[in-house]
Length: 77
Picture 1: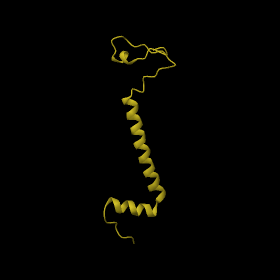
Picture 2: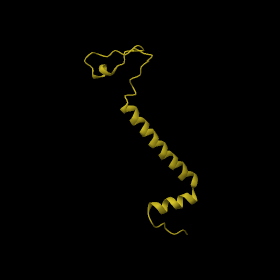
Picture 3: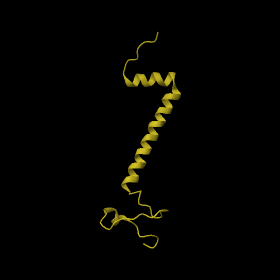
Picture 4: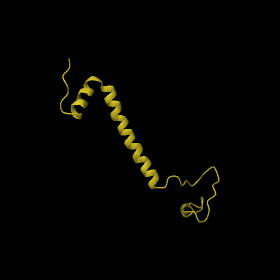
């Protein structure tokens, strides 16, 4: 019978790494992917990524809408 792991989370990680390295490794890579996804989404929101210069559909924005100040005028300016 296996003895209980002492040392908390670090001991659990070490034991898991030796017994099931595929699961621990893929979980670590998933955490890295979530971090990159969160960073990308944050930069997308900060830089107003939804304000695309060339859209395929027409969108009507009223003159008193705050988004109207950020709309680009097209290719010429």
